[in-house]
Image 1 (cartoon, rainbow, N blue to C red):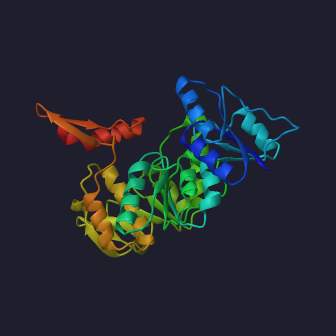
Image 2 (image 1 turned 120 degrees about the vertical axis):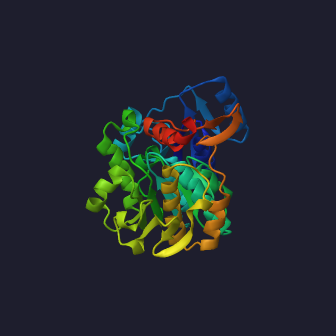
Image 3 (image 1 turned 60 degrees about the horizontal axis):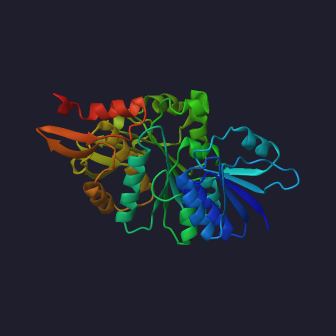
Length: 347
């Protein structure tokens, strides 16, 4: 029986462990922490027949090496034990890569970027589902990817929000449609340099059959003509700002969304505020049209899309003051964009 270790007692690690056990692996789920809440989770999982070790750091015994190590996204990819494992030829991957091995027969949309991933992923899932497709979201939102494999369903599409943490531990993951929303410095405490951070995200997009870029992002726009000549580009500033032929572009013009030369819908049907959300909208429409989603389904989904919790989410008005929850703005750029989006409310 092949032997595996799953590291990280969170949703991803638990799903990976259950999937491996179902597939006939001898698997140990470990976490170096040992809190009261983790102990409760440990007891619940042990009732299901899973082996869970808390306060545990993996060591590589030459006489009993695992065949596979699966890490959760929060586990740094460069910790010494994982570097040693890779050097010794042990198959070492992330939870998303494990899920891909069981779900790669279905087409995926992969969404990455510094900001805008969650809103874009949610929009795409809403559009695909409005078209009556079985298209769940996974990754950073929705299901852990291995949970979808555990369900043993047939999916029309899988919509993945994929962070740099998940990409660096994935080597074969190759969505049919790849989207890059934005790029600004982030996670450099883990990725060390901006170039490394960029290359991690680029490695995913290069493996995709179709590549969609937000052409209004300064960094992506600057590098686009050098590295992504065959991509599909978007712009909220009209077709003249596209980095591609309009036949491969999605843009706003005269208050209408045009995709690949075809009018889709008036943009005023979309209720989310901010130019950044218009940028998210255009890349979502591009993905939908590449997937041959009907215009009516796109329009209906966009007109009824409620937004994403904690992202410029209107809460209430008290004494004439609007309270908006933007607590998911976890870096300076996201916070600045959020404030700019509600500027009219500040005066």
